[in-house]
Each structure stands twice: as structure tokens, then as C-alpha cells.
Amino acid sequence: MWKLVLAPWSPNQVVHEITGKVVTIGRAADNLVQIDDPSISSRHAQLHQAGESFHLQDLGSANGTRVNGEAVTSVVLHAGDRITFGKVEGSFEHETAETAAPSPVPPEAEAIAIPAEVSTRPADFANASPFPKRRNEKDPVRTALFAAAAIAILALLASLLALAQMRPTVIP
Image (cartoon, rainbow, N blue to C red; front, side):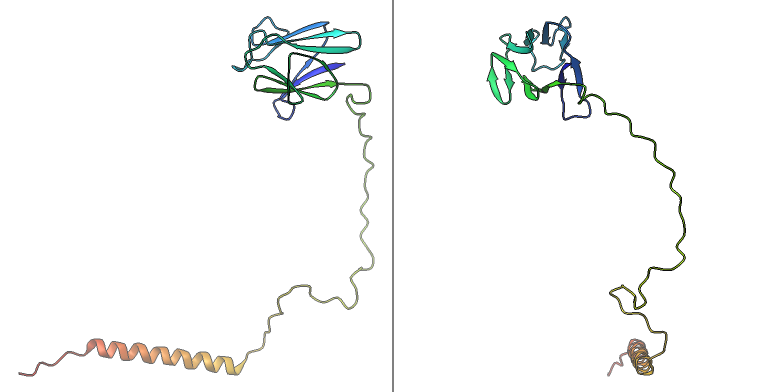
């Protein structure tokens, strides 16, 4: 079955099955394929079947018709041809029994989970973290440095407070 798919790369694609010998395409409501877009003429193009092939003919539209990027007035269409009516993109596709809806997937067998009896972890496995492990033991040198720094900061603050409380003496 032949199809004209409008906006084929969009989730909002519209599929028109080509069932008649002559299919009119345009913005007017009496066309078999109506495209409501300002770039489409009221009678834009026509598809007609000749034997096994389809011919696309532009009906003198204002914005033209392109097939595979080439401006056309009349052309024989093939499966997979990209068609542009004005600014609306589409594709001409043929669906065969092979390309129709895929056969349903057989039901999935129920999986049974069995826990392992032995770990597969290697005997020499170590922590894979790039960061060294934290030590829980206290370092007396580091503790002494922190204590000395804290005492120095407290002495500095005490001297600043003492300077702030001093009053300047005025000599007569």
C-alpha cells in the first residue's frame, strides 16, 4: 500500500493512504489530502496512478513542489522520495507485508534468581576508591600545631581588644 506521510520526522506526522487513482493535494477542503498551511496553494498538486507507478504533478502552485530537493512540475515517484509542498515536508512510502507491523514479540520466560553460594570477589581485592582510607588514630604533632595556632589567634584577639579599650591621653 502506498502512503504519503507528512512531517515524517516529527512526532506529529500525518499518514495518508493512497487509495484512489487520482489524489488531489492542497489547502482547500475538497482535496483528498488537505494540508492546512499558508505555504500550500488551494490546489497545490496531484498524484495519479499509471499502472504500478505514481506520477506527481504540481498544479501551478505559488510556492512550488520539490522532490528530493529538486523543483518539479511532473515526476514519477519512487518509495522513499522526499516531497516538499511549499514549506511542508513529506515522504512517499510503500508498505509491503515485510514492512508492515512487526510480528509480536514472544512472551518472556520467567527468570529465576538464585543467590551465589561463593563470592566471585578476588582474594586480593582492595578498595577501588582513588581516595586513601581515613586513619582513625590521632596524630599528636598535628594536634599540637592546631592548639598553638588557636592560642596565637586568641592572643591576637586579646591584644586587639586591649588596644580598642585604650583611651588616648591628651597632654595640655
